[in-house]
Image (cartoon, rainbow, N blue to C red; front, side, top):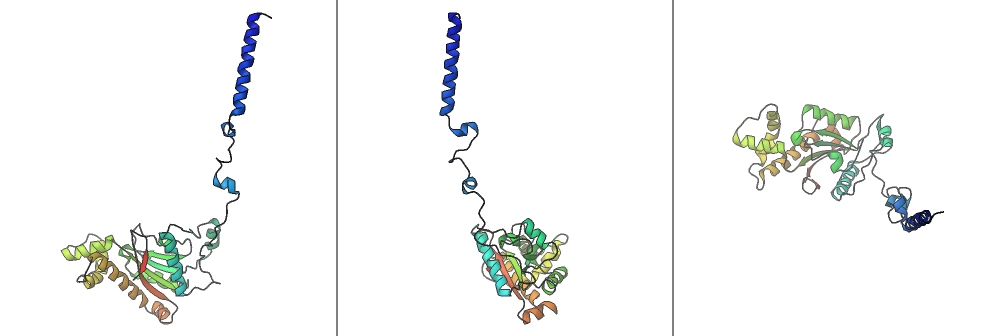
Length: 258
């Protein structure tokens, strides 16, 4: 064999040897394998752990809920929402299947149509838990009244909440329109008409005029619902139904009873 060929073979041998040693020195992750430190928390722990606290389940025919228990569920859910420790209950495939043939909500809510105040989210409940009727300014109308009568009479709801909120656009429009004497366009005029009694009653109260009108309207709507005859008033008088007004704070997420 010639000297030149031998020299070339030696150089190739040394190059391959150097590459092999370098490969042995590389960490496992360089070849696609994960080191213990790079593994995700789920991989280290193994199977995903179940939630320690069981989420509140909706009422059913075998689980009667009192007005006080229903109130406690809502307020506990709001605390979870405020602290961002939500359960997000009854959103699974199993919940959908279980509720496909019927519903038994534990509370009914007359809420504002405002996109920032969805009842199921601010109270941290899910499918089948809350019977919601939403109208701008959380006002009560005939169709809404019938909806709540259905919820109480046929679904056994023990609690109705009128959920108002700060900086309500419908309330502001009503206050400003009534003060200026301008007629609201289209069907918005009907919202103003329904809100007018609350605006008139609260106009001389100290403090923020919009806040005062919003609170007064929520209490008026709650009183109107509680007095609806014959279904709701009878349930209220018999202690089987409670109607309360609440206020949602857009800044803190806290719901308070008015």
